[in-house]
Length: 577
Ligand code: PEP
Ligand code: MG
Image (tube, rainbow, N blue to C red; front, side, top):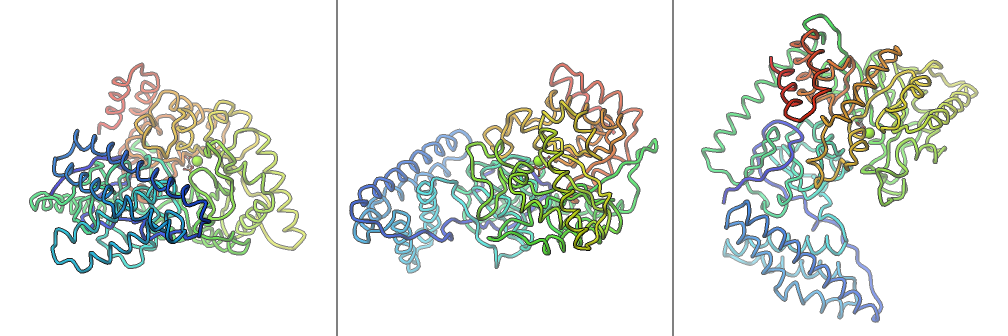
């Protein structure tokens, strides 16, 4: 049965492969005993979970009726039948009573028992229902745990044509893919600039988020096509459609090859304006991609990724080695290490900022580091020591007031004094910059410019905080608009003021790697871009074909455009040739 799903395209290219459902059934399920008097309460929990899944199926059914075939509606019905079967609506309650165990464990025991029966079934149709049973159970588990229905497997044995289909993935999950060559991934949740999406781009594989029901509708091992440029997933396509996409895939690969010829070309416009194109990285292992891209520096090293997927914190020595590897690898070119930006959608496995109701507005980034002086000191010492091995600079994330800068400077001075007393070498004149990603910092920029050596505009968060749109929430993803006049006013005014003050300014958010916006940013006066290496050559190609004399007036007009049509008209003209 062929059908198509639409989501938000986050990383271009075409992948053709077999679906692997990232499954919660592989999660270790908690098992604990309960006293007899808690049995009733546990059964109620279970009943509530089943009820919630029923409601989810209702919602799914409604959306299916409006945009998918009746075949798929039938598939939803199968799930409802499984949910209503006594095997899953009643048996787990018996298990809770007899085993005196928690509801999750009872559901798991029931799943194991029914999967064992499937192994003996000869009939292919009935055997296929195994996936349905698993999916329904995963939904019950998710409802019991009160969370999204996914924790990924560790991807040990999957082949290169594997396309991961998940309900949701955290940045920590995606970072695991770096070691496992998968062809693409798609998720039901997520926004275009969530860290999950950013990492997808850094992997250079096609990916799509916000597909809503992909995890529910796609079957294990089904053939799927992911068009990461259009944001479309084709499930079980006809042969002619597959052939068409194979052709598109070849064309894409040929284009990528052609682009690689630009690697050593200097990025300058037709009228001779030089532009720096730097790379964003998460780990030292990204250096291969940086070299392939011909980046002239690292504009953003998201150091927090050294802290994910582990139970302990990286020691000073371990961090020092990581920073030194990158500093040496760049051979004197700038390496901008951002201090720990933990919190919101990135967190330690254990400890770290407590999950607040609005984590993006909570104890995040520099706020957390200043509240944890020991952890901050360890990182600052490691960065300072690495500064001896290259052109390292420090970048402070999420600054919202000047006191944070003063306090950070004090911490840096203290780390320097310690290292000096210990006879350890470092660059005493290391440059310190700040990220402009909170509107308060953009609005009061002169106060910040006075203190900092350079600034970097984090457009991902700047858009989130200016428009009050959670960047990870697909429900409001349609409102996350980089071209909102308020966003453009802030960005252009920050660039203008920094240029006037003679302070280097970079854009390191996803806008910098979006080729549709390259000329607009050039027109605003931006000369330093930092992006994932996978986007760099496409942006360089655009720079090489740009003429400032044409771009500047159009960018100024776009900034003043009074309605969306006019704005898009100017954008089209900017990207015209
Ligand atoms: C940004 O906010 O634009 C940015 C570059 O930082 P991050 O995406 O890591 O929050
Ligand atoms: Mg940010």
